[in-house]
Length: 616
Image 1 (spheres, rainbow, N blue to C red):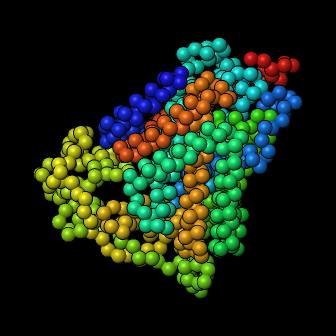
Image 2 (image 1 turned 90 degrees about the horizontal axis):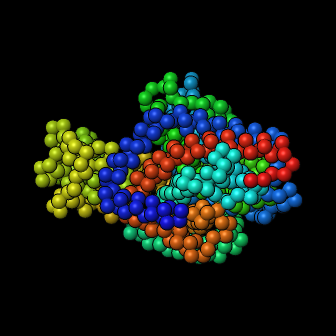
Image 3 (image 1 turned 180 degrees about the vertical axis):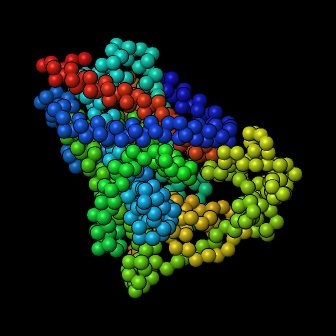
C-alpha cells in the first residue's frame, strides 16, 4: 500500500503542475457540484456526528477503556491537551483568527430569520463571533473525537492494526485485509497529505506576511517555497526524534507561546471588553448553534445558498477531509483513556480554547472598528493603542470591467487565474462587452481562469502581452476592516498584499511592542507548521505501513519530505486552490465512510457489552 499511496500523490502533483489552470477549472466545477448536490449531507452528517458523540459520552459505553482494563494514559492530561490541539487547528486559527470574524463583521450573513444586522454594527460584531465559533468549536471536534475513538478502540482494545480499515471490521470482517481495506487506507493517506499541504501553504503565506511586516521581506512564491523548505527540514528533524521527544516538546512549547500571545492581547488590549466578550460570545454561539446546525438554505435566496457553500459547507468538507489526520493522531496519543474521558476532553477543551482564542484575536480586531459605538468619547489613539486609520496604496479598479489598471492607465490588467499564488498579468482592453488582449484576442473568465472567449481553453499570453509593471493606485486611509476588504498593493506597487495573511500583524501593530508580538506570532506559526507537519507525516506513515505504531525512520523521512515537496510544487504551479478544493472533494467519500464507521463502532460496542472479553 505504501507504493500505491505515494504514486497517487506524486501523480497528482505532476498532473496539477503540468496543467494548473485546467486543474483549477476542473476542481472549481467539482467543488460547485458538491456544494450544490451534497451540502445537505455535509450539514446533516456533521450535526449527526455531534449528537452521536454526546450520546457515546453519556451512555453505558463511556466507561470502556481504549486499551486493556488496567491500562493508564500514556501522556499527562496537560501534554495530551497540548498535542491534540497543536496538531488540529493551530495554523488555521492563527490564519483566520482575525480575518474570519472581520469578514463576517463587514458583510454579515444574517442567516437567522428575523435577525438583520447592518454591516459594521454592534449586532454584526456579535453575530460575526457567533458564526465564527460555530465553524470552529463543537462540530469539528465531535467529528475528530468519533474518528479518534473508533481508531483507538479497534487498535488498542481489539488488537487490530492502527489503520482506517480496522474500524470496519464488524461490517467487513476479514475483507479489511484485502483490496477493499487497501482502498480505504489509500484514501486516508491521500486525504491526510492533501489537507496538510494546503495548511503548509497557508502557514508559509502567513510567515512570509509576518516577515514582510517586520523586516520588509517581499511577499512572493519564491520566498514562501524557501520557507516551506526550511521549516519542513525542522519538521523532519522533529519527526525523526519521535513522538515522545519532538512532537511532544514542540506541542508544549507551542501552547506556551500561543498562550502568552493571547494573554498579551487580554492585558494590553481592551481587557474589560474582552472578558465580557468571552461570556457574550459563548452566548452568541449557544444561540446560533441549534439553528445553524440544521440550516440548509432551502427556504433562502440564492445569495444565502452561496454564502452557505462558501463558508459552512466549505468548512464541513474541509474538516471531514482533515479527520483522517487529526483523528488518527489523537487516537495515537490517547491510549489508556476511557471513551467518556476521550470524548469529553476532545470536545470541551478545544472548544473552550477556541472561544478564548477567537475572542482574543477577533474581538480585539473588531474593537478597532466599534470602539466609538461603545463609547462616543473614546479617543482614536492613546498611550496603549492607536486605532487611527493608516495610509495604504489601494489598487484602482476600472469601473466597467472591475479589473486593475497599469500605472499609466493605458491597459487593463487581467490575471491568468484568480486566487492562485503567482498569476501572470495580461494586458487587455474592454471593447464593447468583451475583453480583448493587446494582440487582439478575445478572452473571458471561466471559473476564475482566463480562457479564449467562448471556450474552456486556458489563454496563454504572448511575451508582449505579459504585464510586470506597477499598478495604478491611490493612497487611502484605511481602518483594519478597510485593509481586509480593499485591494492593497505592496510597496513596489507590482502586486497585491495578501491581506488575510497579514491581518493579524496589522491588528497587533495597533498595540505596544508591535515588533516583538509580530515576531512571537511568526514563531507561533512556525511551531504550528512543524507540529502539524510532523504529526501528519506520522499519521500517513502509520497508515501506509499497515498500522505499525512505530514505523521505520526511512519511511518517516519519505513522508515528511514528500509533504514539503507537495506544498512547494503546487504553490509554484498555482495549484494551491486546486489542492484545497481537491481535499473538499475527498471529504465527500470520507463523509460516507465516517457514517458507516459510526455504525461499525456501535455494533462493536454492543457486542462487547454482551461478552466478557473483547476479541477481534
